[in-house]
Length: 159
Image (cartoon, rainbow, N blue to C red; front, side):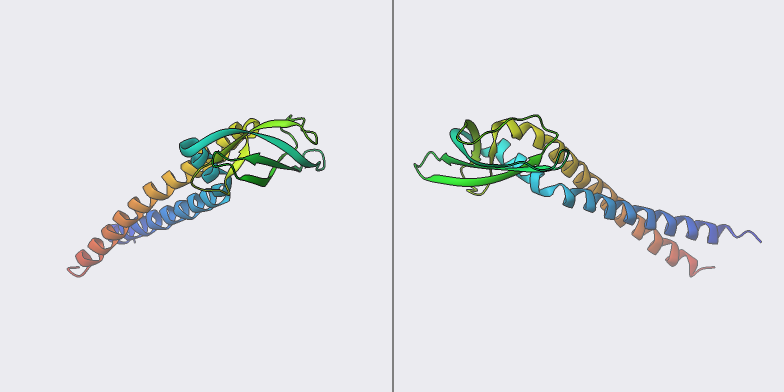
């Protein structure tokens, strides 16, 4: 026998569970892309360009990841060494002792990258921001879905 109150209860709980699933998916997407995404955002907001030199290149398997080590001089005169992993699919020929342009953060000394690789970090930044937007929207809708469940339960007391 069809009961409209039970159908409404099922709908409210289903909506709540689906929204929680969206929060989990958005959190996962944002977390998986947070390292490169945050680095891109920091370098975008507080990036400084300088000259650097390649000190080591480790080629990965084709289609895998390669590692390049580089050294650069900051504005305050200190020299810093850094390592950067990038996909071998990026067509970038780096050799020992090559001069490169390096983009680094003045506030966060551990955040730097070769300028040619900086534009490839935008993909992770876009996914990170998209995941955060999904979390914020789905989280707000989850809150209101929870309120509607509570309101529905209070109305059930009359029946």
